[in-house]
Image 1 (spheres, rainbow, N blue to C red):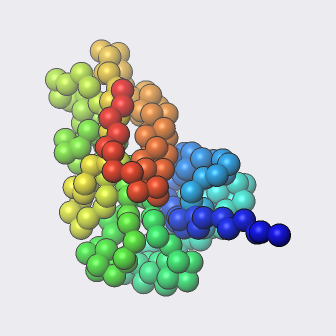
Image 2 (cartoon, rainbow, N blue to C red):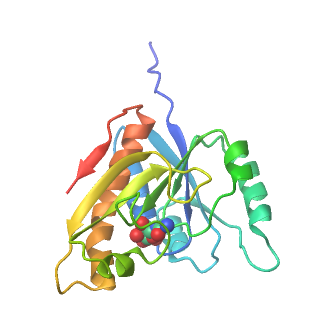
Length: 204
Ligand code: GAR
């Protein structure tokens, strides 16, 4: 009897610092039938990250490597590199991970690193993007998925989604309007990456 050979699934790790709603969307997508990847673990630098509880509830292995005055980012990155080798991770998805990965880390990890950022890059890099867009006379906001390089929010753009800004919008409600679109965008881009599709996603 012929045994069916299943194609290998890309091994994914997700790094978070907070709520982990993008992480949750990625894990849920990865549990759908014939998904070409597998989420091997979720790691947080923040012991109080809500996303860690969510990942556990979804049956995913979790790690917390705290970054504080006793544990530097350098230590975090060394521990992470060991874990990536051990778990044979080919793709890292940063999902609300609020630390900057160093040049050393990026040079020593030979898989792909993706990030989702809440602005239409290259506009509004860094923090507080919802507040900062409202301070400008701009009517469109959005999010970008890009590859991670040693320069902040500057890698290759793989997908973008836009939303309209209304007069009554506040940073808080802009964030809640955008996050739903982020989940859709990020999961689509990850599927493209693991299946080798080169199309850049542009959505409204
Ligand atoms: C998301 O809006 C993500 O784009 C942003 O943090 C939020 C995390 O939410 N990321 C950054 O600002 C990275 N510079 P989540 O934890 O619910 O996915």
